[in-house]
Length: 373
Image (tube, rainbow, N blue to C red; front, side, top):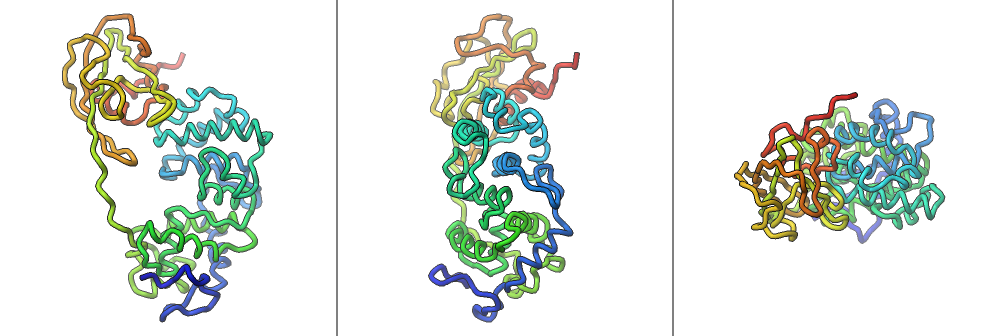
């Protein structure tokens, strides 16, 4: 059982639950003082004393969903340079957005990003709503993202809850209810800590604390600014928290991918439908794994050979894809397909699973770039 209970209010300053002291009122003050000294320098984060730009906060938060900070940092500035404003992003063709996004994964985010930009530009005059409620009405913005933007960009007293913050709160209050059932409880406790002033800095401080100090394994409790308030530490083993319910094994799917290579080095590609898995992305012809196409029907009548098998894990299933390769000198592509020069493959909106398939048949193909003229 959890040491806290949603049926009652979150512990008040100095209140005792069991034998463990509850986090006290100085917690936000101590954390903000630590943040002022140790905040991470991230490309989307406003400098001390500067005002955060809603567009930059929104863009970074969408990119950071299910993606590591280090990976996002490599893509963010390139994306921002190409689409410096929400209006520029709204006017861009979806294909260009997907190409720039390629490699970040979870491509529904890119489609929602584009749809959201169009709504903000068309219905809000290029200005993001300043409340959680208004933000949640936009495409692709859920509870966490709305709270993060409201707090960081608009200073609202909001409590975003990502994995880092869940971990900090679970340990701070010694919540023993397993995730995901503990999420409402953790959300309520996190909200109880948010100060009236500097809510955005506090949200980012909680994120930084979870990322650098209150880490999943071997947390650095001796240097934590909240160590004298942490019930998990007082209990002796904060690393055990948060508890998690056992994960169900992901279902397995299989299919075939055909990599046709023309004698001039071009590769046969096509664009997936805009709706559904990997919508609007580029792929080699494939079938059998996503409910589309006949696994026995190759796109061209060629002498196909087996080039290997690749595996890829999606959010809801694991995929095993047999890759077949064939060479041809045919200049004509089947309807709905196109030949793409090998040097142009890196600029195509190829998701990782399709890059793996091409690499299995033609090693190095997706990494070759056209020489600068």
